[in-house]
Length: 539
Image (cartoon, rainbow, N blue to C red):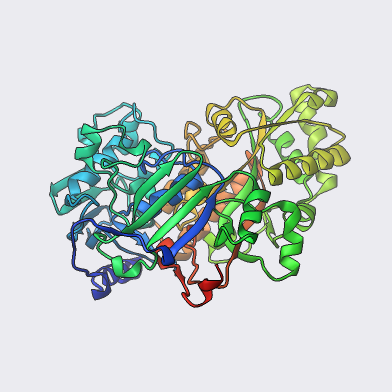
């Protein structure tokens, strides 16, 4: 761990991170305008409140935090110029560079302190507040047990932010690279609290782009921020986002030359077109730290019984789903944590499609509950309306019928409604996804540390699991990996979540696009993309 920190601090001193600063300006070169599609309107443009993939990408586009995640998985300073770490590994001091909001106001340590403490206010709506819990008194403040003044986030002056943790947290700097840690202009936020709802003079940002236009459920235009400290790294003059929720329509727009790139993670491609696109060599794929899963509500029968949960999980034929439905060469998930978060180490904690064991466990679970199997036919399986999710749900319904003799009911709904059911625990079992927010497997594991975490849809909690995660905070290297593996094994043995497959994301991109890249957690590096002017004449 000491070596890791030395390397990190060395990176923070790199002259490549230095840049002269200008007041916020913008440019809009039509020749360098990238045209993309979003499958839906961002739920929020306020990084403190984000929780969905589309909103997160907008936050990375428009805002920036103290650090950022590079393509090689390293975390380097961004709005911070350098970072000091105390000998006990618990106190971070961030020294900020001269950076500005897009209206010319300085970005200060006070903006960061206020933004982070806003998230920890018990009345503030934030799905990702738990990411700040390593900070001393953060969790207690969010739960109303202590005042925000007792949270160990302190702006010493405009350029110095000091953060104290409860315990050493090996992945804390990686946390700060995620968009929930991005600041908002606290002066504008106080004077104009509606700033994040539309493009206006009050929407100021500190990232590589500025929000120029936002026609809800129609289009978004972002233009280059010439006041951004690292503007030389930003190649495109503007990015135009169409907002089209139909996968086939979006693909047709791409084929007509109306979009330069289409597909994940901003939107999906039609399931029925994947095989053909792949065969033609047009489909580009990359692994991402995401997983399609089934969440069991452990507060309700029959899924308050671990054997019933495992029976439904073992009955799934994951290989059949990835071979015949998703068709992107995904990894059938017999582990909890995506492989890319384990340095590409493949692990399996149970056998896929273990028919014999599934039947045995179902009978055992029903006996423990004193329940007849016919009762299971009343179960409603919830999922979102996307075509891919519907096809997977149909396959699961058939597999459970074939293996367990149970015919569950399928119920679909819009994604926002599904998320509402999941967070409020008003469901029995449901198909959903998770996508890592920072480049460490703890991002997946920590969601299930406490049952009241908004993203712990299963409402599962286990004292030994908690102990193992706490123990890992004081470890490094292989010892930490071994402890986290024990925690994952325990989780899988309880099966509050049934993983289906770990993701490969797919997209189409025109040949004139250069340097299309993604972070280890699947975020697009918008600022690195460029357009070959000569080839783009075919547009």
